[in-house]
Length: 292
Ligand code: BEZ
Ligand code: FE
Image (cartoon, rainbow, N blue to C red; front, side):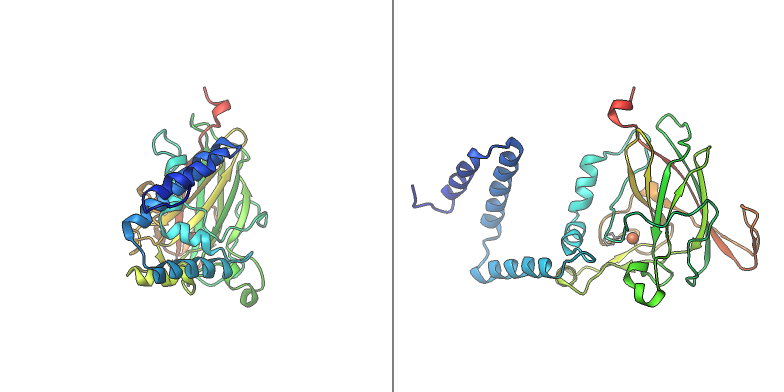
């Protein structure tokens, strides 16, 4: 039957997806149709406005490639990445809270030994990072894999300036020691704007929003029989903590990065200039099968 009107067309489309073999596909397809139709009925776009939406999504796809993922930026800036994070990692239970992965993680980062400097000669204030990894029961997770990555003191990641700096920097993979501890040297990261020279940047501007993220260090931590932890530690006092462009800040992830005068650092290294220190003790959640 045809002759659909503004209201009957929704049921007609929903009915059409009833034959989907996979029940999850059917459930999601129905919800997509119902919610998109309700949205359109609510905002009542003109034909020109709908064309603008199609153009916006087309540009979002066209600017994306293996180095830039504009759809992830769109998901991040619309709060969808953090909504999915909240659904899959509800707060409580004692495990370290999670936040967005972001687009600057590099698979199989350079493996370094504990205590190494990962700054690759980048300029900035030295930062000593120390911490530990334990399970939900508080027992140290010996040998946990700790991936770290962060921006330079100008707010750029290595992958945004590979030609200028000649290779990866400010990122590494460590293996925690027998007591689940790790430590390394790097430089203190700065706040930075997310890439905003594409459609997502246009959207932020039109919405009267800034593109900035508060300064942070990313961590991805894995240990057998535990859920992977994807998180950041934010620098206390950063002016963008309350208005992160991707809504990724959680109070439990904010730490002071206290500055120390030149002298002997906690690992015995003799520092001839001031340095900052970040310490964070991470707690991983047990995988369901291993719980109990
Ligand atoms: C990041 O923290 O690296 C990031 C997260 C979301 C969007 C852009 C960058
Ligand atoms: Fe980041």
